[in-house]
Length: 424
Image (cartoon, rainbow, N blue to C red; front, side, top):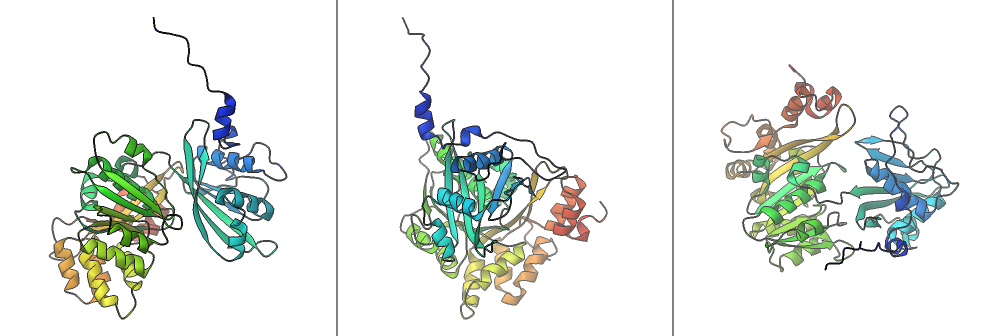
């Protein structure tokens, strides 16, 4: 006869040893829209402890915060659906911020690094009562405080589930253009525009949906998505991903790309194309048959091209520029815009597919004309363009979203210009 007695519960002490103390007190709290405030701690102490910091951080996440900014001598500022709220009635002192920095950075040398004018980028992880983990991307930068020195800590809350294409709202035509066989795909946008989330969704798509097994090398600073949930559910697929964090596993993005070339991957993710060495290594990888994904900061497709070109030294710009155009397959610029009711955000994307015909047109023109050619192509005003080329402009997408009442008039004007609301 089978034993039907209930399975004994794990002792509370065993759970608490694994859990990050303080997170068990975190709860979702209401937003005060009238005063743009949210109460992250039920009772504000004169000086917060490490446990109260963890409680405050998780309360912000559970209440919908994507980012939480902590500054010396300022109130905490969680950002919820693109809007900043005040998270406490009183400001946090420099002493409290140093405690938070030591806790998050994992060592007492955090304040020393900031005082030495270093900028810190790292990840922070909380163990939750459920056994799950909440991860954060953290930036720590020195700022001018009340006593002359201070620190700003920005925590980006990372979703515990790897995003998929539905979550980032990419349609089938966009996905097809974003997944070529080789070359470079650039996802651009401002900080906080969801570039890493979109790249993670595409990586998940390759791992789960590729018709043949793929090996992906993922180079980040820091690692935001671990893909553990994806890899544990792959079943019979032999696709794999190896992740390296700059500053922890490797010295630089460029070193990571050079290493990747000796590891025979199909796809290389480069967290950010921020310097000459990284872009040069990415070009080498793409021109030797690899598919490379990377991100950069830009407000439009033509600005993204100019930004990548200006990183090259003047004496190499022309030759490297031709390599860049030869390797480019797709450039997407992404903005996240609050919905009119402030309860969510909508991705607004401009993009251009670099087909063979488009690359040939650019390569046959002087480099100083590339930006204007790209602008006309994005607007659909390029005569004799490839009819199968995927493109959309900020003007056109803002026109559609404003007509659908998905974004406000001010955001449509800001991103798409006056033409985005004309005749709507």
